[in-house]
Length: 118
Image (cartoon, rainbow, N blue to C red; front, side, top):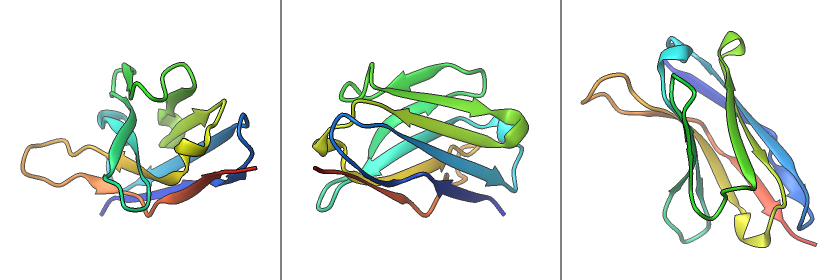
């Protein structure tokens, strides 16, 4: 059974930085595309960043040049470095592990709150 454990959320001022971590267990981590999503109150869950098993990355336009996704396969961990944070980045951030086969649901972490406020 896959388990994703996130950490690193919190309250920071605008312009500040945070690094989120997500450690996985229960599946061969290096084979999976990993992603970070976020969901604000009343909003839909949206993709923030994604990294493939080969290390290719993609980002939402709203976070390009501010956020960086990376992975450490030796530690079964994916990171999201968030810089120049804005109030509109306030959300619950979820770690996602894409399933290896069609028909199998993705795995999700429990979410970590990120609040940007002065």
